[in-house]
Length: 444
Image 1: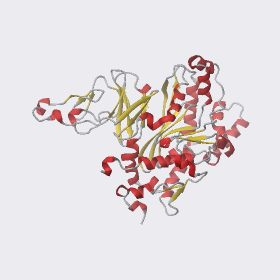
Image 2: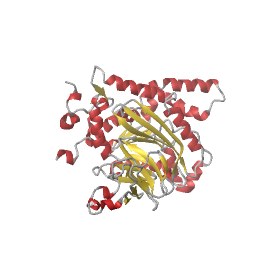
Image 3: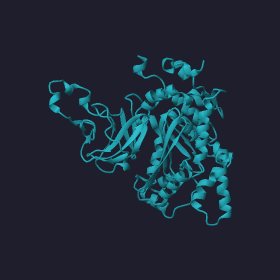
Image 4: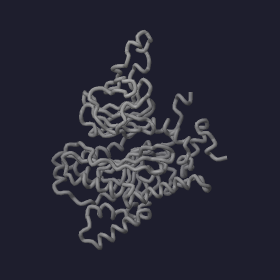
């Protein structure tokens, strides 16, 4: 009998057995039942990235986002704060807003029956109000207004939501990983970021975990992206007028195993991690005239040095976001199903900093993450072939054994000398097991 036939919802032991110390069962990638449980448990109890405050600068400005099947609105309130609301009318569940972004002049108004709501979700009006008199409507759930996530937090302009009432608080969930967002924001002399240059989006027919694992995979660039780095090398030798900024972004992909090994890594609680604690492919970017002096004047020489010296390969905010401090980029995963993941790549301009920083980020996004790029296409091809092949006959286990030690099982915050270790991926799956436990309502 296939593990797909077990019925994981009714068999917690079988669910937990999908993840072992050094291997994971293919069902974690291909099973729709598992994905549904992830929606209800893992994603609902995690803090998911919604958007950046700079996307809603004025009262009534909004964006709409799908958080793993839950549509939400992020909107700027008249009090200056940012609110996150479930994008579903309290009456019959119609979407209040359908556009990806826009501006609401005064109230959120449902297009179905014209119920209206304040920007904080409070019910302001219903059609044919007299028809509700004497019905006890004021005590109904609908009268309480729009549903809201269990938690919302804004940190340095980054807005996150936890859909469930259950789960760790924001700072407890992310912990030391938040320093990576400080690093991004403090690259601005005024400590603020601005979303700029649009968004690179792609649909990949693979499970979201394949992508989030690959972000921590420092071994694959040498083989997977051999053609990209090799072509960049040839261009640098043959064409004197080649774009130097593009070359300094592509050439490091061909660095050998020893380079990636020495960059170092760190696992953090709840599946988060840092790849490139010592240096990364971004560390050798050319200096920007007067930029360091700007930061020293704004933050002091010591803090400016800390900011510029920390350029990790990737910082993972498990389960669905990763950041790069230089260039200023975040990647956001919007899982749709067991075998479909939407990717968003956002670039940021540090306010008051040289514009070349934004240009560098936008170039990196196009060169590396666009589905038509020489780098992105390599990854997408392999993710989709992996997703297809795992469903076929053969070994049902995916091996994650490289540099495994028993000590890592007892230490979630662990500095690694070798950036090539698969400990970062194993750390993600230990978090997966913890977040996939039944909640109190299910187990009661």
